[in-house]
Image (cartoon, rainbow, N blue to C red; front, side, top):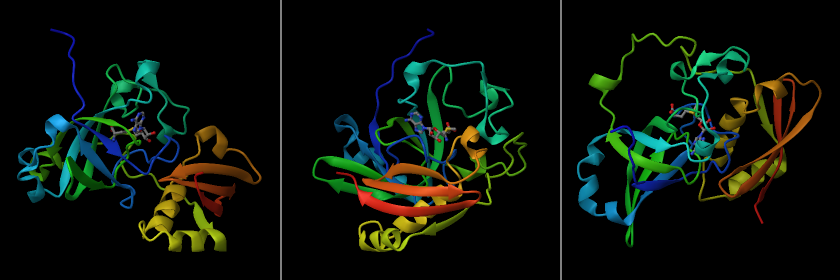
Length: 235
Ligand code: SAM
């Protein structure tokens, strides 16, 4: 047996509507809240019995947006500036022989909305609509290995990027009562400098845009300064 078929048990609802801006790993932006909406076959309350005694969960998922683009034995980890090449199995890159992702996320509770069973999460690094293959509780005694060697990725990436907001952007965030930490969320997304490596080398002011939730966010970058110029709801 060398080929297997799996069925999605649910799909992620995420503020990240495009790959650009998603952090490289989970847990880096705790304000990134999302949820798994379980498929009808897996939405009986019994399926999550006991889950609420765990603080974190492993998610096994499909890199569905890039799954049809194949894989390569060598990849260029962004962490190495996009120049050095490493074997795909030495990285967490998305272009893998089997496009399967693995993330530890914070469990924030279970919600029942009519026939839908929803698992609420934070600190996610998944694109909206990502198919989930499995959920398992995170077990610190077995899964947390503080002395483990972690090669070229030995600490969370840090940047010197600063983030400021125009008064329109600040007021807009304050008015979005359903997302009280929207401004902090945007700030953290920009602080990690989501630009591809080749754009980071550019000088002078550059303009960027991204979608988080259903908001279109525009900002400029000049050196190490991000400035959020305007935010509007998508039409
Ligand atoms: N934590 C996971 C892992 O280690 O398997 C993902 C790591 S991967 C380096 C993180 C990137 O995957 C994100 O920055 C985002 O661009 C990408 N990504 C997230 N969800 C995706 C999806 N459904 N399809 C394709 N790419 C996705």
